Structures are given as C-alpha cells and as structure tokens.
Amino acid sequence: MATATLSIDLDAIAANWAALDRASAQGVQTAAVVKADAYGLGIDRVAPALARAGARRFFVAVAEEGAKLRQVLGPGPQIAILGGHMAGDTEMIHDLDLTPMLNSVQQVTRHLEALPGHPFGIQLDTGMNRLGLEAAEWQAIAPIVLGAKPELLMSHLACADEPDHPLNAQQLANFHRMTDGTGLPRSFAATGGILLGPAYHFDLTRPGVGLYGGQPFAQAHPVVTLSLPVIQTREVVAGEAVGYACSWVAEGPATVATLSAGYADGLPRTLSNKVHLWDGDTPVPLIGRVSMDLITADISHLPEVPRTLDILGPHQGVDDLAAIAGTIGYEILTSLGPRYARRYIDRRTGGQA
Image (cartoon, rainbow, N blue to C red; front, side, top):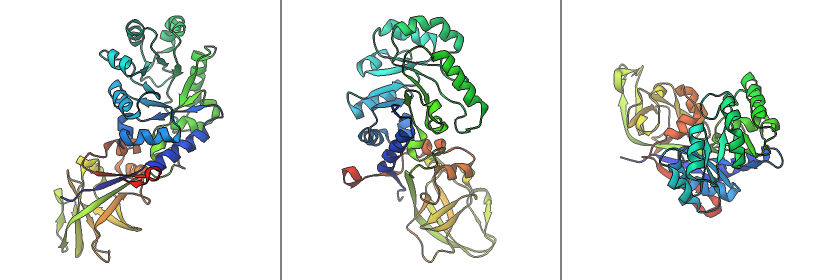
C-alpha cells in the first residue's frame, strides 16, 4: 500500500519559537515544551532545531521522555520533568541530570531524601486542580523547600486560551501570594500565557503548542502538511453507497478515490462526511466513513486523478481539522500515526530528509 507523507517544517518551528521569545518580556528566558514526542512530530528532530534556534531549557512530561531527550541533546541544556520525581525515577534523574518539577509533599520528600543537592523545581496549584502543591501544603513546607534552593517555582494556567476568563487573573493573584518574596525564578506562562501579556511572564516562559503551529498563537507559521496517496479509483452511479454503514449515497455518477489513511493514523471518525481534502487550491469532499486504514473522496470535479490529496496544509491547519472533528489541535497533532513517512524540512542543514 502506498505511504502517506507527513511533512514537518523544522524552520517554521524554530521561527515560531523565536517569535514567542520576542513576545516574552525583555529579560525573560524562553524554554520549549517538547513532551509527547514533541507533540507527535519527533523529538529527535524537533529538539535540536529548537536548540539551534536558542532554546536552552526544555520541558517534558515524564522522566522516560527526559531520558530520550538527553540522548538527543547531550549534556548542557536543562531538561525539566513536569510530572515530577516518581517512584523508580531516582537513578534516571541523577544519572541523566534531569530536573523534576515536584508536585506533592510525597515527591518533595522523595527527592530531598534520595537526591540531596540535586536540582529541582516546585509546581504550585493556583486553581487548575491538576498538578502541584496547594496553598496550605506549600505554606507548611515552604521553609524546608526554600532552604534547599529550588531552581524554579511554576504554575499552569487553566484558561489562558480565553483572555477574558476571570480565572486567569485569579490564578495570577494566587501565584503572587504563593511566590512573592521568595527571590526565586518563576514561570507561569505557556503559549496562551505569553499572549496574555508581560504580567504573566515572570522569569521564564515555556511555549508548547504555539511552537507547532497551534492556537492560540494565531501568527504561528504552519508546521505540518499531510499528503495522502490515492491508491484506487472507481466509478459509482446514482444510488450506490460508499463505505461502512452506507453513510454516503451518490446522487448521480461520481468518481471516488480511495486514500491510504484512517483513524489508526490519527484521522478521527468524526471527520466522516464533514471535511475536505485539497488538490492544490481545490477542495475535495471526504465522503463516507473514516475507517481504520482508508478514507474515500469524491474527485468527480477534478480534471485528472491526483497522486495525492492534502488533509493538512496551507488551506486546512490542525486547528481547522480539529474544529471539524470536535476536538482540539493538540489531539490531532499528538495522534498523527507512526505509519506516515516523515519528511523533515530543514534549510539550515541543506533541505529535506
């Protein structure tokens, strides 16, 4: 079966990091979030491109991701673990010089007892109610923790994508109450927080989805193109159905193309009969159900059978596709499957690979 091609523009990722670095207040350091295999795009290629662009601090979700990133980047750049210091992570954190963001009293105890003197940060819960020490917990242990000199105090905004949401200001006030006067570096803003303005920037910003072309960074350079090969065509007549459950029935003669990709490759079933693919600038409707490995499209209006059709590209980005599917761009990005042939665009190293 022909292979679909996912093109990933490393130059665009680097440009997006640079733009968000410029958007961060003067004197604020800009990190890069590369968790979930760089949002599904390949940490082994994305992280070096970000390092070349100027990123010196990276955030991943768990220690295993940090271990892979250390192999990619080598010694030097700081690798912070958002999930903290989990049981069984101690040797990995020590040997690979990882910096856990400790989220609970249990994690603080584990880290300070197992790795005294090893760098760490603290994550505080300012209102998201997901990860981090709550205000009462922090108040109780802050004297001990501050004596151990954490490298960073951080929190995470729940509604940064909605600039007018009242929780943003409430969380900001909570973060100030919990951290003012500590004299330690602080981090509060991911992509959405950067766009909320300098009051949210503190000492370190840590953009994630904006690096990869996603909202809320509307000025982001597009990063991904997904081209699906046409592997078969057929003619249908009025009254004939296409695909599972006969969800699309031809109203007249039509030429149907079958393309190699499906929900096993990260194209949600909720796209069925709702989305367009693109032949250059010409939209082509997806017809019938998205199945595990295949989708079908009505190409009757095209002058010739195309070799490929794009489902992600200049006319339809990850957030556009997500809106049609009833999800978010993050999920589309991180679901792009391993069966795609990956083509990286990197003009700094001489082109494509």
